Structures are given as structure tokens and as C-alpha cells.
Image (cartoon, rainbow, N blue to C red; front, top):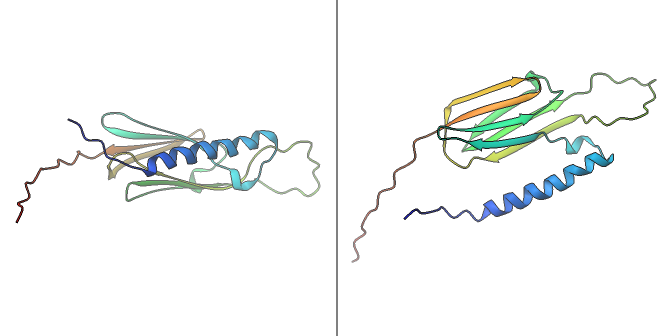
Length: 144
């Protein structure tokens, strides 16, 4: 029999993601502000690792920071405006600038010493190697 760990907060994370996507879609209707700059991120796993892919176009490599603490992966960065021209009249301005910070609780334990990250052509790829599963031993507790 396989035991499945009960995580009541996981349902709230899923709900939060759905609500976040709903509000992120407002950017398609001209409500662009620096506060809603959130790169799109995919997280998947195979037998050996958890893989994270983030689309972060227009952000320079030196403006991205990745941290892993207590099985929480955090990606943060800033997309800076190239220059401010006071005498330019814009007909349309849809690009979003500003800073972002995304944090994810990873579904399994990972080896924090065995993480690879690559950033190329606006795509960030992170590979986190899984640790060996902890073997739980059943212990008989004597009643007194």
C-alpha cells in the first residue's frame, strides 16, 4: 500500500495560480503596470531531476538571481527600461518593465549542491537533481 502525504495547502497553491493567471491576463487588455511583470514558468520532473523553464525575455543575465532554501526555489530579477526619452510621442506602449520575484515549493527533496542553471535567448533553464528518497522505518511502540 502506498501512502500519500496529505498537503492541505497544495489546493490553495493551485487556486492561487489560477487567480494569478486570471489577473495576469489583464495585461493583454492594456492594463500594463510594473507590478504585474511575472515571467511564465513551467515545472516538470523526470526520474532524476526537477526541471524549471522560465521565459524571461529582455532581462539581462546579471539581473537574475536564483536561490534555493528549505526546498523553496526563488527566481527574481529586473527588466530595466533602456532609456527614458522625454521628447518621444508614443503611439502604443505594451512592453512591461520592472522587477519580479517568483517562489515555488518543490514537490520533492532536491540536492542543493547539484543544481544547474542556464540562461540563453531569454529562456532560463534550471535542473535540480533529486535526492534519494528517505526510507521510513516502522517502529513498534510499546504501550505501558
